[in-house]
Length: 88
Image 1 (spheres, one colour):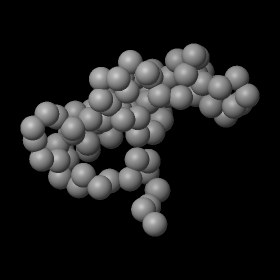
Image 2 (spheres, helix red, strand yellow):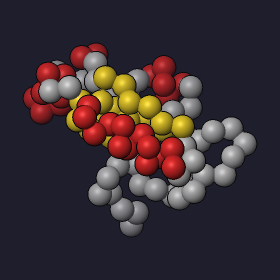
Image 3 (tube, one colour):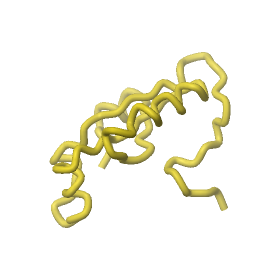
């Protein structure tokens, strides 16, 4: 579940990734003109019933969020929201 505070500020949660790779994705999104950040996955953001999701709490994962800077063009604005997803 995305962070409601981030969503209210205009951020989009893209995906969850191992912390050691978070900076790689932040740099990628920034190179495309987005603002990007990586937040720790918090227990209140994970459904009790999702065992795999709850494992992310213990394995140091980060949620990648992006947003378009105000009044700027963003390269590749049609990017999918998560790696591997394609528009159909």
